[in-house]
Structures are given as C-alpha cells and as structure tokens.
Length: 146
Image (tube, rainbow, N blue to C red; front, side):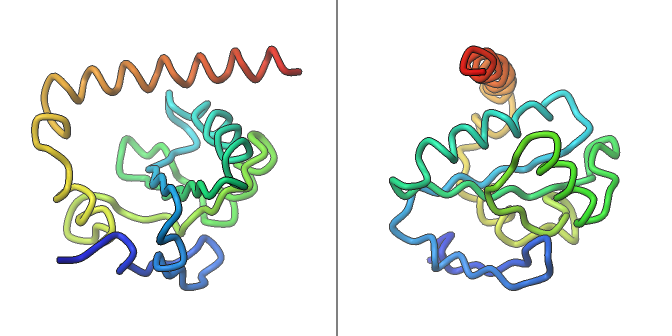
C-alpha cells in the first residue's frame, strides 16, 4: 500500500520534491489560495511552522486555482505574494489541481485516506467553521505578539 512518503511532486521553482525526505516528521499538506476567505491561513501556518519546524514539523503548501479562480497567479507571483504579505518560508509546491482528471496524485491519495463522513457532509461543514475560527484565533495571537 502506498504511503504519502512514496510521492514526488514539483516545487514552485520546478524542482522535484521527494516526500521520502519528510518521513519521520510531522507533515501538514495544505491546499492554499491567495485570494480567498482563508488567505489569512498563511499567517497562522507560518507561525505554526516557525514554532515547530525545529521539532520536526513540515508544512507543504499546494496552491490551487480550481475554486472560483482564487489562485490566478503564476508560481513566481504566488511565492512573491506569500513572502511579501505573509512572510511564508514553508515549502510551496507548484500550482496544481487537487480535483479532476489532472489532480495531483498526492491529493488523490489523501482523499482516498480520508473518512467519507469527514470529507463530505456535516463534519466537513463543521471542519470549515473550525478552520475559519482557528485562522482568526491565530491572527489575534500574532497581533498580540507585535
């Protein structure tokens, strides 16, 4: 059976990223977009990354434009936006599809591993609400540190 560490993908700079390098670490794979209601997630994700990266946490961002055109830029433009506006230093992969015929294989794998009732339905709505609350909470924490 495949493991997440069996996958390879491209970074936003076009270099191959072998997920085998993340084995034994805490790995968070995140679908991101620069022009959506969850864009403040970059601040929270970067704060989380900075806090735990020395303890073995890796956050990997996958920009995607499949949801209402909320990630329209090129890989370079996305990286620049994330760096300038949110101080992102965690790895960003190439802009990709996460659904459909051209979906990134790692997302096909992740979706196959997700319990159906949490991926779709009421629990998904609850998760969305929770993530929105976490984004606001982390944003408040960050503001308190400034």
